Image (cartoon, rainbow, N blue to C red; front, side, top):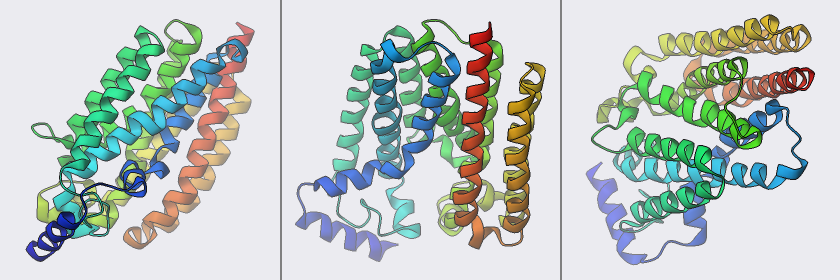
Length: 307
């Protein structure tokens, strides 16, 4: 590790300013999709006409994805730079493409910009954004650094990536808190995201153990962590199915049951070799999971219109 850090310091001295590509790599656009998708689901589920409020949806998607999620990625990479030097030395900070303390500076600037944009969307959204930003820093930065506990850290991110954007969008469109049914479904999809986030931890078991990060794979081993992951993802969707049936949305519940059945087949395959298959399962299984989110959102939209 010392050799890697020395290499990084040498590279950092030769690069004084981060390139636009390095900044984009720090913000990780590929991670923006989950909160952006959840925000769209919340706007759809609200049931109110979006035509006159299109700018609230567009600005909210920008806030949920590139701004708040981008901020969380920058914060995480800065405070994880020593772990990344072991697990992923090619990342933008340990590789030296993001020199000096620029990772920290960008994190702070992105936090301020995110709060300013949230303020444009009203007090409800501003309050939700402040919570999201606080969670982003608490997840990665001391003294909290919740990511050191796989149960708490992934739960916090799941709530921030799925539940909070969903409910925030609904409030922005409706101008008032959503129904209890919608809140319950949003919470369940945030719970299921805990399992999805655990999939990312299988690639960094060695580094997590060396740095004292108690992710579920590092804490329990790959096999047990994979089983926990699958149970959490499946149980959350079973809860959604129950709520949809209770709300009289049997057709939408059955559609999600079919999506869950396909995921169960993938889970059996994943459990046989979780370390090697986590990335492939994540790509296929998560696609089915988020499809179910939109199915539930359209069901809630129809219910709101009927009421």
